[in-house]
Length: 381
Image 1 (cartoon, rainbow, N blue to C red):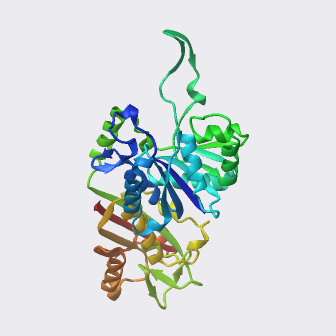
Image 2: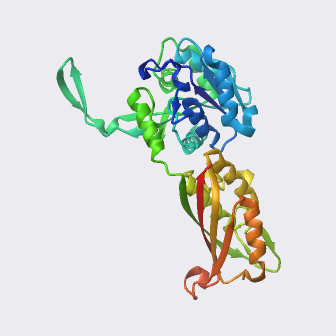
Image 3: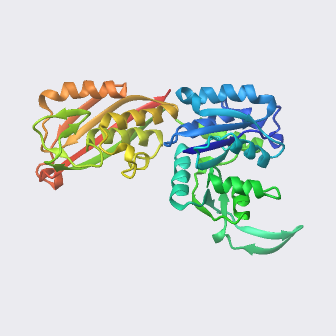
């Protein structure tokens, strides 16, 4: 199980705020709430522990419950310590015994996208090491003494480090128990205990809000986010005579089925990809990969339900979806209305379906399989 500790106990002195930094609003929404939106948009179910100042525990609980929605039972709030290290230790102590991978995230990185949490979790599980997101250093770096430049530092081996930082729980707990000094981040503490730390690609939006300039930057980033977005999804599957045909969430008797890890429903899969693309949440392969046993043999409605939860959690609502099937068979014919009605009910928004052939060209023209193209329109909820 995954545990995510969200550190929100900082004073915010450098921000010049009259309240703890995590409770300062960014375009009308508390920083902590924006950070938790990224947390709850991640794929893996997780226990979330928010570490807050004693003065703001009640406010933190209200924010956490609002951000979690139906998953409110998976989030709790504990009081922070005198230092960031003490606060993380308090968060670790509140995790359920079943948690074996821990992510530590700064609420001040309020715009961190959900995909970064998923990326870090996958890397920790795969490597068994500590994992931190990073971005390359683009500026020229100088080593100085007072006002004199001593040398230019080779930046090729330098990176900017972000959160969430992920670790195997047992090793992180051991590292915290043996820490004899204060470290600037959890990865440094983890490495000092003799454990390896690896990097994964970070995200530009995961910058830390520390100063008034950073706060203005975050508000500008949110300000240019349009209230309407579109995405395109494409999926292809080969015919498999040994399989039943599921397409658009419907069973098609007496038709050749489609090969796939799930039920091969290319239409539902293309819709999911279009929605994820529009919301900036990655793709169906990254979200529901073939290595995930939960989705082996799963029907299209399962994928659509999971995708809608992610899209909704990111603050978007579905406007409409257009789908086109490129195939020799099945012929939509008399089932088009049924198909549109069924998909519209699944998505909770109008879905239009059309079909065409490729005039004998390519794999669809040779009747080797089907291709589906979906376009989704989403709006800010």
